[in-house]
Image 1 (cartoon, rainbow, N blue to C red):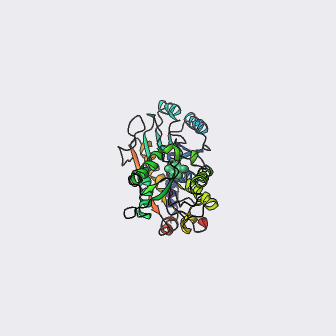
Image 2 (cartoon, rainbow, N blue to C red; image 1 turned 90 degrees about the horizontal axis):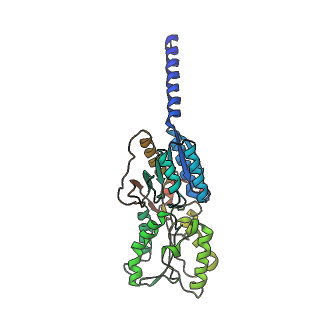
Image 3 (cartoon, rainbow, N blue to C red; image 1 turned 30 degrees about the vertical axis):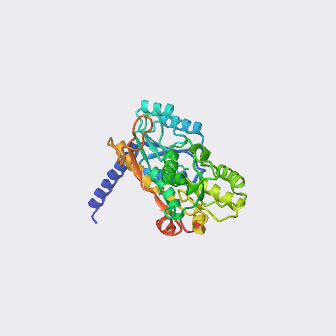
Length: 351
Ligand code: BGC
């Protein structure tokens, strides 16, 4: 190689490197507000968002709020004050961010609601999530099929556990499942011995496992201690399903019920494998993160974010343009392929 060529190449590389540095700096700071590190998925959501945004050259201001609404509000205030250029927010309580997001709007900062819709504020530009209604319907349909309700008269005993009443997703998870189950309840094929059937009666504050467990222990001692069989449990996600599984292990000796879940949390996978939880609905956080990164990139470049639903999610100020990713039902039959072969978990993690 001659000297002139080497010198020219070095100069070109230097210019190219400067160009990359400049673009990384110019790309800007993205605030990512996550609800809590106590529930498994948000750790993955946060890590995936951070890694994928950094790969695109953004600087990431990632915050977790310990499931405290006030902490999340302060974190968002700081993001605005620090000049973050776009906010991605998975809210703790959908209704509690109106005031702080009015400040974001005032400062011209676009907001993407992540996984959970933020309610009653016109500061939300976009929403990205999994199809929450389909999650609920999938859980309900799983129970219908497992109990063969089309052909059996029952009656079968059912109990229900959903999530935090301030999480707008609960309306879709529980609503979707009830749209499938209610006709069988009306027909008398499904019976709910506790009588607890409204969203508020079956809610679990903070989606907390111990809270779900203690409610379920009460149900078991009040309605099943006489040997009544429990046939099915609609649990809206894995942290609440785990509460049910724990309560059953210590307080129930009847025939084991069919239990649903969502997220395929590490703690639940062994239960799916040994049959103490029949299914879970997997929502690959890598998929959601990469879609949100696409949206961020489009908005930051002055364009419009990709959406595939412009009718379902009205946050009280109008419909928010949304991108809905597709959830995947997981059972003992496909967990290996969906969770392990895809690289989401290693074999060791779920032992
Ligand atoms: C999410 C679920 C999750 C739950 C508790 C919901 O908003 O959509 O995936 O299980 O919060 O973290």
